[in-house]
Image 1 (cartoon, rainbow, N blue to C red):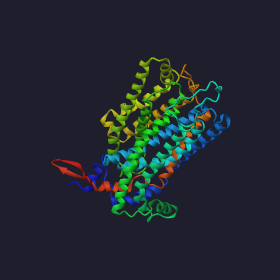
Image 2: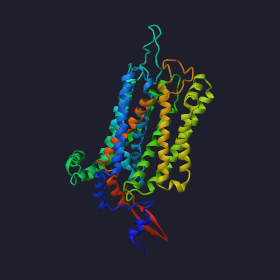
Image 3: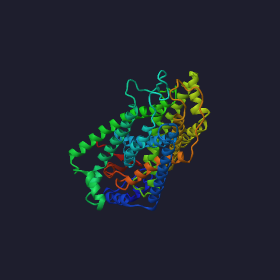
Image 4: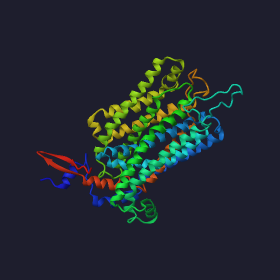
Length: 471
């Protein structure tokens, strides 16, 4: 007769059965601990952040903020971070809506990206300063030239403020979701912690005592904020990419690009979550809480986003290819064939080819390393995607022209461009890592809840996971 301990060990590769009575102290110890690997990661992120500050200061003092061209690589760094950190919290929102049991280990990892929303707001300010005016300041009094954008009948200078409001609203909403979902854990920790952590937990927990009404309010609040976040995320992706990409390239009118940006955000958001989960499971000591099921289930969605990305790239290319207008051919040559053709090939390889070949096989999807490797490849592809689009858009030439009348050359980075590119990545990683020392990377109350809803039971000759449905 197989004992309970043997059964738990046998199925630990796919499902895990953490003990609720030991969970609070164990996760509290992991949150407070600072192993050498964590310190090394924190130091590496800090170095990248400092390099970014140096590159920014040098660029600001040498080129100023009057011309947007020299800031193309800074825009790439911002949009790469914004793409990932705005899409990652959506995983927790969506999987909670669908009542997926396997999402419990990744929920808090997803929601913790909300803290980077503050970084996004700060990083966006320089882009507001270099945002081109509607009217061409170099045009004569009788030769007024207007820049073509999606905005009609708005005051001069208004669009970038709408973009800022969108970025700030996403940050505030995601922080509110993180606060609501972590409040029960903070309330529990305020009685067991000491020092500054105890003061922080008392402030964050508020008057939470776990009454039935408080749980009902929390559930309703999470659902409402999650719905608003999803709806506003698509809107912000549309306006911000249109203003800082399409409107920078004369004659670029495309309804597919904002959707492509959102799909890349969903793919990279899920990909970075899987990478972090793999690190936690492999080296962080969270094997008891993270089984294979989150990787196996999330990999199917990652494969779907990968296929959708390839379809929308094809839809964009085929539309412009058959249009045959000179401006459309110049745009295709600029972003896909000539100037940034080599970047597009690498982008396509890492965003589609590698994840597709990895996730195509079910035995690979049913591992922890397979989906994580596909997610890592998608992250590299997203960096190349943003480099190709935003460096190209910021250096496309006269933005007041009727259309792109020639194919501009590619702009290669100098040392300060590289510093500005890695700086936002370091800032985001630094804030995220610091937040993990306050908020547990595993949601304690949701994991406890899930442990009570699952058990292994025998049916005929096989053993199966049985899940209870509370609703």
